[in-house]
Every structure is written in C-alpha cells, then in structure tokens.
Image (cartoon, rainbow, N blue to C red; front, side):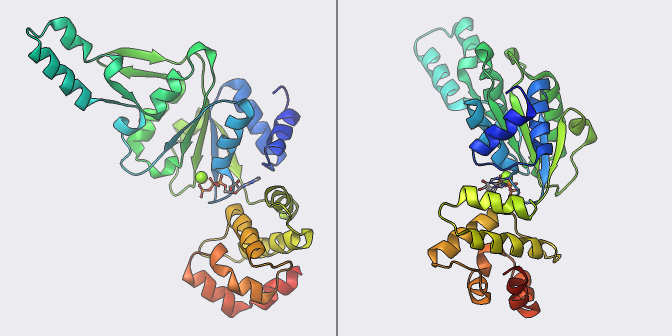
Length: 293
Ligand SMILES: Nc1ncnc2c1ncn2[C@@H]1O[C@H](COP(=O)(O)OP(=O)(O)OP(=O)(O)O)[C@@H](O)[C@H]1O
Ligand SMILES: [Mg+2]
C-alpha cells in the first residue's frame, strides 16, 4: 500500500470504516516498521484493526491476549518438558548418555514457540506477519518491560540457544483499554492512535456495511440512539460492537424502526449493567427514541 488513501480503501473493502487519522497511523506504522499502539474504549474496533490488516496483507495473524500474570512461558517460549523427559529416558535406556545427546534436548526442537517467538520466526524469508498484542493494560508491568526490549530489537534471547532475530519487523498492533497507563518508554517506540466512538455518519456507514439488509431508517435510529447513550455518562457506555449486536437483535425480532417498546425489549443487548438499564428506563426511553426517530 503506497498511500493513505490506498490504506483507507483497503480497510473499507474489508468493511472496516476508519477515520482518516487512523488510516494515516496505519500507513505510517507500515512504512516506518513501527508498532501501532491503539487505545480506546471497549468495542470501538481496536482488535478488529489487526484482523483486518492481516487479511489485507494476506499475512498470518499471531495473537497474544494479555492477562494478569502473563509470563515469558506463555508469551514467548517454553521448554517442552514432557518431550525432554522422554528423550532423557530414551538416552538412559539405550546406554551411555552421550553428552551430545544431552545437549540436544536443549535445542530449538524441544522449544514450544509462544506468540512472540512465533512472530519473530514467522518473519523468516522476509515474510511479514501481523502480531496482535491485545489488551496490554491487563498484563503486569514486568511483562511490559520485557516487551519494550522485544519491540525495539525484534529479537529474542534464549540463554540455552542464543538470540533469534526477525528478518524484518513484523506488523505489530498493541491495544489497550486504558484500565492503567502504559509506560511512556513503550509508547515512545510506537505510533499512537486513540480510536474514538464513531460519529453519527460513520456509525451509520458501519451498520450499513456490516449488517446486510438493514433498513437505512433503522440504521439511522440506532446510530442516533447510540450517540445519545454515549453522552449520558453511563457506567459502561455501549461500543460499536453493541450497535452491531443491537441491529442483529432487532432484525431477529423483525423490527424496522426503533420504538420505545423495541428499545425496552432489547436493552440487555447494549447495556450490561443493571444500574445503567434501570437509569435508562426511569429517565425516559421514550425521550431517547423520540429524539432520534
Ligand atoms: N470502524 C469499524 N468498522 C467496522 N466495524 C467495526 C468498526 N469498529 C468496530 N467494529 C466492529 O465492532 C466489533 C468490536 O470491535 P473490536 O472487537 O475490534 O473492539 P475492541 O476495541 O477491540 O473492543 P474491546 O476493547 O472490548 O476488546 C467488531 O465486530 C468490529 O467488527
Ligand atoms: Mg479488543
């Protein structure tokens, strides 16, 4: 892809409706070989960027889902102990445990590659896989420090084996829901982009592209209602994922326009906290629907 416009067109072809600034960030990340750091509320399309990019580039998507306690053994590599034990038993059974054979069990063959090593190895021969490091804010800070090194050098050091380097930088997408701040040192190595909730027009377009046979009036009702809901200071405002779920739910119910009754019936599709649902019911669902209808 040789321009921002080409990136935007490729995204649209994959049914991802991006604002121009995201297209620029992606283009720069690809051209400069830098990781793309995407932050934003839940369900605004952060993870989807990596999936869509893999599909556009026709590259494998290697995904590392972060969580509290994520360690090197799950993120980078792990020794295959059962196989090593078996090999040792075999060496013992067949006579003198030759030193060469013992050395053998500390070789690449007995290593299980986890996502980060997989990504480095997948660059062999100049390939460029997409590495998604999803929800980094859930991982511990020690892991972040490890990642910092990996993202600047794109190499992994395994004491028993040596250093394995990427032939070229993989396409790296890091996402965060900002439940905590990611260190500046890591951010500095990345191109940063905040994905905001889409505005009304973009949300209508997302709906029309993603939900086949959706009546345009209903798309506009839903986008309008979402805009209102997100301005209400709810405990958990709905994301684009919820808008799409809402459209699917209303389609199943055979609804073609958003009425207060239809909204009431389906509130559990878009709001996941009882406090938010109660508040909306008491503060006027009619008002919400009337203002967009
Ligand atoms: N701009 C967009 N164009 C098309 N579809 C979108 C867009 N943004 C979000 N979606 C859709 O919304 C859904 C949620 O997106 P995604 O899972 O990427 O969100 P997320 O930001 O990673 O959320 P979370 O923080 O909960 O992981 C997906 O089905 C995705 O296809
Ligand atoms: Mg996600």
